[in-house]
Length: 150
Image 1 (cartoon, rainbow, N blue to C red):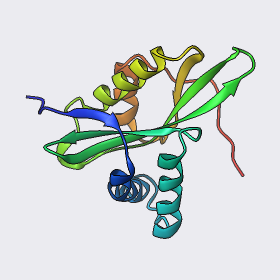
Image 2: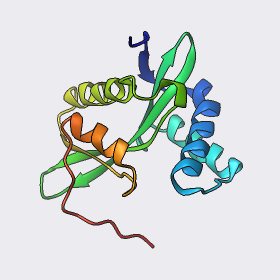
Image 3: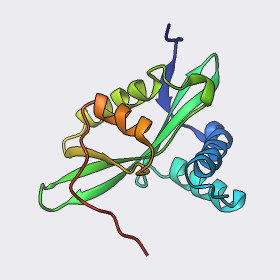
Image 4: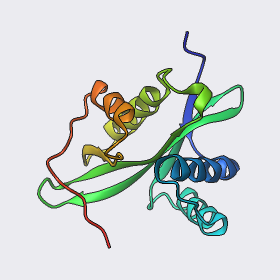
C-alpha cells in the first residue's frame, strides 16, 4: 500500500536533505564523493533563484523521502522550453512505491500551467535498468541523442 506522500516545491529548510540525497545518489550511481561545501552552495543557489530551476520533494510525516530537480533548456527548434529532470533520489525504504511517479506527475502539472514547456528530458545511467523501466512506464522514451561533456 502506498503511504500518504505530499509533493511540494522545496524550500530553504530542505537544503540539508537535498545535499544528503545528492551525495547518496552520486555515490550509488558513480561511486563519486561530492564536496559538501560546493554542493551546499549549489543547492542553496538553485533554491534561492527560481530562474535556475526548482526542486520538488516528496514528504511523509514531515520527513523528506525523495526529491528531484528541474532545470530548463531553451529549444529554438520548438520555440519552447524543455524541463530537464535531474538529481532524482528516493530513500531506499521508499523505493518501488510509486513516489517517483508522483513527483513526475507534479512536474507535468506544473508544466501545464506554463505557456512554453515543450517536453521533458532526463539523464539516466546506462546500467540503471530499474530507473529506465520506471521512466518508460511513465511514458518516456529513450532519445536518439548521445550526450558528450567536457
